[in-house]
Image (cartoon, rainbow, N blue to C red; front, side, top):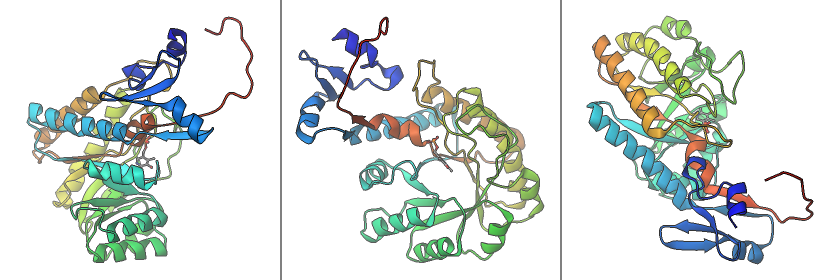
Length: 327
Ligand SMILES: *Cc1c(COP(=O)(O)O)cnc(C)c1O
């Protein structure tokens, strides 16, 4: 039994498997508080492969993130607010979206299709009207029409400008606007391209002068970012532009730091939520105090960090062979 636990790294917080265990019969179980689910029984009932989804893990992870922001902001006397926006490309199932929204998540969509789905949920009155939706991705005419329509139905929606063409298309947009910056900082991640085509450079953004209704400066620099310093360095660079933009656009009050918080897939020492949140807020507090501007509101869109451990798939073993020295 212990061999199985060890092989699959079960019951270990550092691998996000603290809810998993094997019982005396050697069957896989999941614990939620003092309740125990027998996964083996489920798979016997539904056959293989079976996908298991544990909404309570989503709830726990998001409430841990929001609590960490709350505690840290209090400790550091950070005056800005913080928001979590769930990047819907991670998983668009209603079970995911509604579970997270019920814990306080806002949303981020990257296409007209995802926005269409949000519109349906909104029409079914699943959401409280304080929810806000950020719109990334190429703004096709259809996408922009959907944005306008959803906005006029009362949903708070913020299109994020990703290039100069979109800037022109959204010039007369009535609500809040965001803009995506393409940073020079490069990080070691699953998005390790020498060239990033998304967003405008700092120079391009500042050349636009005053941007009507500008509210958010956004970047998304990578996924599965390996080092803690790479979670912090981009904040520093983005702040330089934020500070200059704020002079021209006093309504700008929010920095959206995108996704990237890694999941411990391999045996590596991982950074913690507590530590990253503290470093981000400390840095932003110092920089904005020095610049004599209010502490910015902070958005994070950490997708896989919140969702990855809530879902797994069980496959039947159809053949096996022993490998010497495997364990
Ligand atoms: C993919 C994506 C995310 C989520 O990235 P994770 O690595 O899962 O945290 C967040 N924001 C944007 C704009 C994305 O494209």
